[in-house]
Length: 406
Image (tube, rainbow, N blue to C red):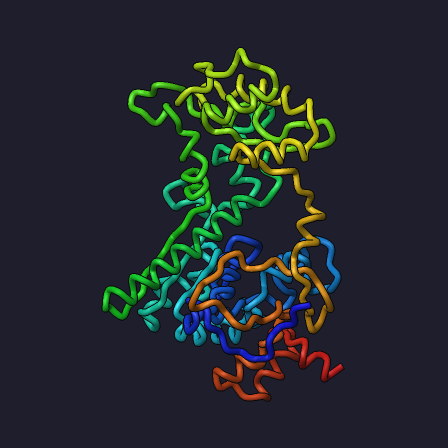
């Protein structure tokens, strides 16, 4: 079992960078989770009721959902009511001291809170301010709510699925939120690099719209010949849109094979007794993509004749990309066990990147709602009496103080 280190020292590549997380749900918190994993000091701000992400999935703890356990790690939590005068005052003071601010609040509320980029940059010109929204201002929908399902529907993914099976379908994962979260992290890190390399001690404003990001992501391959002017084909990447693409039944299970050249297809066809297809023009050069539907269907018929292990051994011998169908249960069992001080043991999703010279040596467990509220406000110079008064009025939440006063 891997317990959390008691030291607060971090050696990650973003060590020394401070990030104020004013976001909610998945996209923003996912981006700041990655920054925290890379060593940044992340302060997440959430309302006294807690972030909605804390309730996603079956909860072993009332305040820590399975998503929250991983999404909130390597962060501190300040739980304060931003609608109160004291809450706004605290965040404005805090915002003056941070390198990075990430938010998905709408433009109107940000302005009313005094937390727009222009307002923050007046007192903190070095700030890297990333405003992640659903739709760009030019769309006329900048104040519309935007969730993963809506963006998947509008970015072309659902239509691509319909071209395969006749029904618009969403990916069985919150793809748009997570991809856009990675884009937020990339943009922030690029802006930090620019600030350091430019020699100018000032930050910049980053605006990111989920729909723009996901359209760029989807249309990289699905633009196809329709991107030419004039178009030379319909949009859609032929190989990916084949209904025969994907896992195939073996004699005893499922497997996914990915031949990518005539040599590889010839090996499969010869092994399956389809010598009439060996050397066929259908698997030559660019035709591997154009004739993908035909090739996949013929390959599936051959795969069905033998068991999974036979094909794993065959593909290894012939250097053909292959993967067995791994269950969610298997993947969960492969994750390391961590011990959370408030929850007990749980499976942690490891950070998937290693650095030869700056990997973080310590990690902080996901905090309870407002676990660091009093510490953060004390650091601002606020008195114990003032902080306690806010806690009594329900404007600040601190589980440590709540437990002591119970």
